[in-house]
Length: 307
View 1 (cartoon, rainbow, N blue to C red):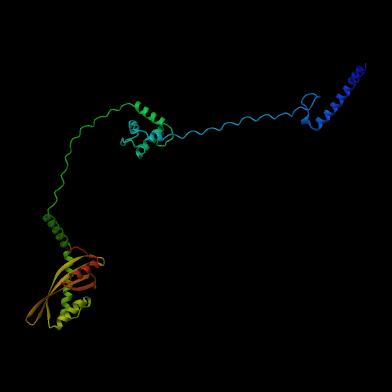
View 2 (tube, rainbow, N blue to C red):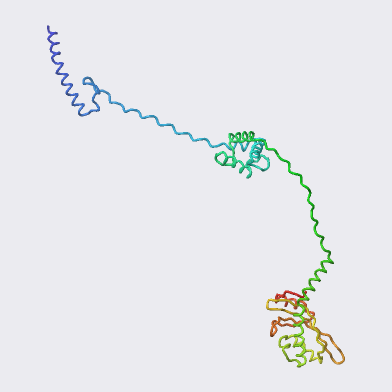
């Protein structure tokens, strides 16, 4: 009987306990929603929900391997020569078949072949490209080589015979004679004008334009006069004539006949001048002073029409 009363008391208290627990659970969920059970009330707090795992990261793409050109470049010589022969068959190469795939002509030929295939033009081959090149050449039609037409030998013209030294000398003399003949009238006129001035100077006993223009002649005349020699015949011999930088130039050898008592002496002076009125750059030299005469010609830039 006591047991029944006790059980009845507990049965009556159970709803109150459940209500108290339910109210406490509501307050706890309000203060901390994350700690609240996902299902209905009753029992202990449910474990918090876990966040979903992120999706796996995609694998990075692996870079494409670099083209293999080394294998072909280092291949046996017969293989390299075959590549050159294939290029020649395809009209891409006309150089020697020497197996040198790094020569300028071979690199250019490979580049032309690659250009025709719309592939990168690098002038080198991968093993796959080498196989494709050889296969393409093997399928090319065999061209028939036509024999060139026979050529008739053309006669070789004989070189003209070179003139002998004697003939060359004669030709030179002929040209000189022609040139001198053209210059002779002007040279003679200049020489005769000088002779007239020299004779006038002698006749005037040391006065005149000849002495004024040719100081060395005036000294020569004075020395002969002091030695008691007189001047007789005056004969010109033209030494040279031609154009110079300042005008027409003439060099003339003048031969003087001088007398002293019953003795006759021959003396000689070379007169050089530029034609003008009065004469320009006049000088007189001893006939033996050839170097001085030639230097005067060089200084005047004389282009000889006489020699």
